[in-house]
Image (cartoon, rainbow, N blue to C red; front, side):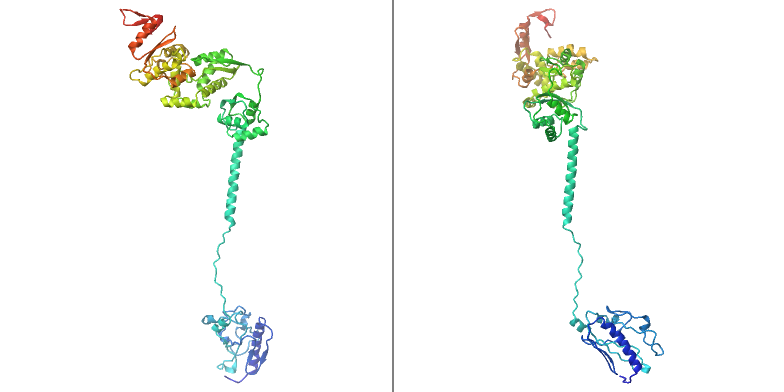
Length: 528
């Protein structure tokens, strides 16, 4: 090493190191001192001493605590070996270049170090060409003394809020409840005000001592209201509980709750409307019944026939009738149940029809329908046959035997294709022909059992309960013929045609014309 010292050079180098020391002191603890001698400049600190080789420093890399410098200070001397006095070099503590990256220094790892600067002996006039910075400690020693505490990089996990499912469930529940309540409110409102409902009129019977719940149930069954609980609440709020008057009422599904309650809680006196009792006997035809109603000033006969045959009042028995009514003269003949009815004078024909329909509905029970199924007969077939039995049998006691004869014929259609009942012929002559608008041979023949096979197209009158039950619970016999003595009201039954003819001769007194094949009987009874 060259021991020749240049005072100017040493002084300049000392200034440079002082600038460097002043920058590093700002980030270190107090208590440091500078010592200057002729051979070297030292920098003392409490931390272990390190020597930094300036040549290892690079302007392209900076440490975390590097001080700023001006570009003019990159070279301390110019090419003619003179000091550039225009700027003071401010050195940065830099990281080593790419070949020395493993020795990167940081403020957290180095509390102190030493720097030794020596001039390049090969440089003429002993000017500083480069600063050799040599670390006193290796990177392994530094890492051993200041171990790295590297934290593992944790992947940030998306946190799912535990509240999200609960919020969704609560929101869905609230939304569902709101929709249900809205639908319920709309339904109650429509039923209460009868919005969008039809105008079906029903005859409703309120029994004695019926409370609000019973009345609501009856109205629901008759399809006057849809929500009985809403009717109960409305009636309670209206103060109408326990005020319902028993009786028969004409109600419409188009009536609002208030209108229904007013009708059921308002008693009409005899002075309000005049009423009349009308009796229909067994076997009466619809045509005859209409004339009786008109004579008693109940309603117009033609309008009654029209509405009665139109039907569609919503009764259960109507659903059991055949859909087709081809060749029928009066569609609902047979369903005007014979009884005594009380009608208001000048009533609407719909009201009269509903009262009669209601009576028939109550008369035919579930037991009757079960027996029909057992026999393999429909309601319309039973009523049609009962109308014939009603017209043929002179007494109620004889009806079951008469019914057995017709049932036996129906069950042996090959031998007895026709019932051959005289009353069916009379019905064609006395009811159909005088009242039909356009004459129809097909309809005439469809009712005349001397011309049609089996039962006629429809009933020939309106039978009573005795005739209906006589068909349902007829006697079990082997008879296929019968004839009656009008004077004695006695009926004679036969299994064969020969026996039947003998009874006829006995009843009527046979008068035989030897020149004729026909047989005539007294009192205009004719048998061929």
